[in-house]
Image 1 (cartoon, chains in turn orange, brown):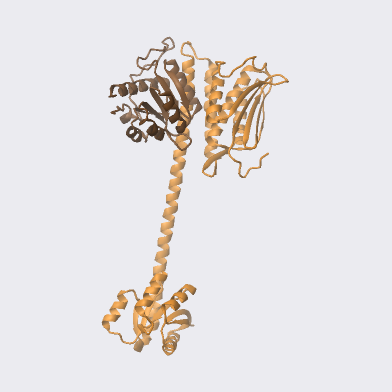
Image 2: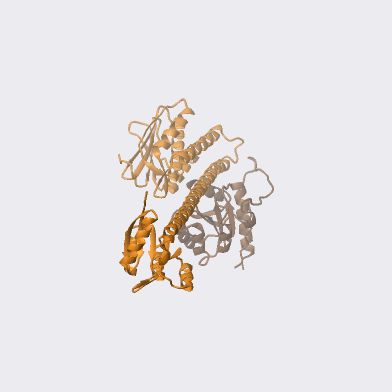
Length: 357
Length: 161
C-alpha cells in the first residue's frame, strides 16, 4: 500500500521532477507535488500548505539550494530538506549540510531517496513531538506561575483584612477602656457589644472568603447576603424584641460590607436598648445610592438630639464609620407614628449584572 | 537634617516600656506625659474607627488635633495649612497618593515629625529613606502607642539642627 507524500520540489527541470516522482513511487510513496523555481514561488507554496518534505536541486538559473534553505528557515517550518543534485563536489556538499540541509542525494543514486525521506520524516516527527512537549511544559509552568500569583494575592488580601479587623477590635476595646478609665468595673453590656462586633467581623470575613465576586478588580459581595446572615445572628442574642427585615439585592465593595455590618449591628443594638416592640431594618437601593433604615417603636430621640455630642460611644462609632468609611450621610429622626428612625445612605458601585429594583 | 528613627529595627515587635497595666484608680490626665501635652497633631487615616480612637487618645493626653484627613492628597494640603508638630500617617489609603508619597511631598516644604501607622511591616525602609521619624505597625492601642509617639518625637527634637 503506498503512502501519500506531499513534496515541494525546488527544481527548474520538469524532466528531473518526473524522474524523482518515479523513484518515490518505486519506494512505496504516492507523491503529490508542486514545483517551484524561485524564492517567491517557494514562499507562496510554503504559506499555502504543509509539506512533508522539500527536495531541492543545488544549482538553478534563478535559485539555489542554500537560498531555498534560507526561505524554508524564514518560514519557521520544520520540514525535512533534502538536496537532490548532480555531483557538486565534496566541499559544497559539506557546506550545504552544515547550513541545515538534512541529507544530500546524488541524482545518479536516487535509490537512496526513499529511505532518506523515510528517516528524515521520522526525525522531524520526533523533533515536533519534543517541541510540543516543551511547549506544553512551558504553558503548564506559566499557568502554575499565574496560579501562584493569584494565591499570593488572595493571601495578601486576607492578611490585610484580618489585620484590619484586629485593628477595629482593638480600637473598640481601647476606646471603651478610655471611656471607663475611672470606673471600677466595665459594664457587661459593653463586653456583649464588643462580642457582637467580633462575631460580626467574623461573619463578614467568612462571607468575603467564600462568596466574594471579582468585578473589574474589585472584590464585591451582596448586601443581602451580609445582612440576611447577620440579622438572624443578632436575633439569637435577644428574645425581648423581634427583628424584622427587608433587604434588597445590591453588590457592595468588601470594605462597605464590613462597615455596613458594624453600623447595622450598632444601630439595632441601640434600638434594642432604648425601644420596645419590633425593630425593622430595611435596605434598598435606587440610582446607585443605598439606604439602610433602622426603625423602632420606642420613645424616639429627645428634642435637640445631636449624635456628635450625645456621649454615646455606639453612635460616635456609627458617625465615624458612615462619614469616613462609607462617605455617606446619617440622619436621626422621629417617625410620625412614633419611634425612632435612623437612616444611612451611601453610594454603591455600578451594579453590572444586577437588575436595579 | 538628621532624623533619628527609633522604631525602625524593631518595627514588627517594637520594644515597649516594662509591662505595667494602668489600673482604674490611676487615671491618665493631661500633662501626665511630659513632652506631648500641648502639641498639635494631624491624623491621616481612612478607617473611621481608627481615626476616632486616635482622636480620643490624643485629646485625653492633652494634645490638640489640628485636623483629620482620609487620603494622601488632602493630607498634604492639611499639613501645609495647619503646620502641626506631629503627623500620624496611615500608608495605604484610597486615591493616587499614599501615605509615603504624601510624606515625600510634605517634608521638603514643611519639616515635621511624621510617624507612620500601618498594617504593613515591609515598608519601614522606604519610610526611613523619606525621612519619617517613626514607623508603628498596627493594630495600635493607647497604652502602647503613646510611649512610641513620645519616643519618636523626643528623638526628632534632639536631632533637629
